[in-house]
Image (tube, rainbow, N blue to C red; front, side):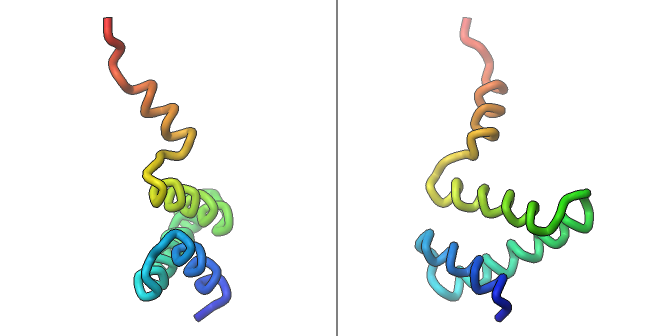
Length: 79
């Protein structure tokens, strides 16, 4: 296991995931970060940071603040 995989696995463990699932999620997240860095003009580190933010907020049952603001804007106004 790479150091990078181990670090991300620890994040998922701290969020309450079982060890086997935490490792699987870490590998998938790192793979997706690499895909995003290849497909978009963003570093792997930046892609990983963004994906981890989504995962952490999601584990807490919340939207990222920016996503929450966009969600609020899309709601129809009552009138």
